[in-house]
Amino acid sequence: MAHAPETRDKVRRLYVFDRIGLEVAALQCDVSMSTASRWKREAAEAGDDWDKLRAAAILAGDGIENVARAALAGFLTQYQTTMDAINTNGDLPAEKKVAMLASLADSFNKTVAASRKVLPETSQLATAMDVVQKMAAYIRDNHPQHAAAFVEVLEPFGNELAKLYG
Image 1 (cartoon, rainbow, N blue to C red):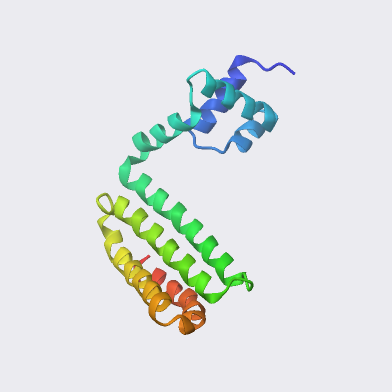
Image 2: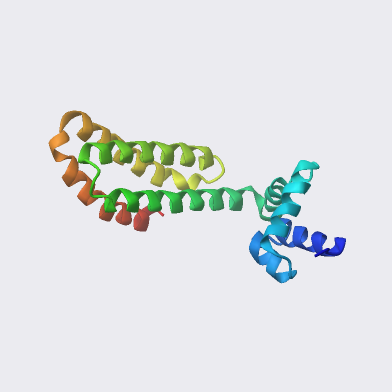
């Protein structure tokens, strides 16, 4: 089914400037998701990258502080998802969990460090996460027999940190 160029332009506008998801934009314009995805892909191949334009529109519209907050919030969502996966996978040995937690804390610190200049309020949370990372590494290296207990108390402690600093 052929669509008018105005329909394609409307899907693009909704996605890029109104920040509506591509699926919802397609629904609003009575276009299939596969068609909207194809339009987006073809536009990118022609040099009209909708995702880059969307990011630029966010920067221009919200300011760098809100963008940094959104990026940090997105990372925290992924962080929590990973934590949930670590805590629910009973097949992982405690030492592996501690190593994964240390790596996750390192990623968190790097993300926070990148946003620290824009969002100085994240410094306290970054310090708290750095301490948790150092403690995980210390337990892994010096007291591996306590790794399981550390993993057990880490999730509720992480919730406390989020209440205090998040």
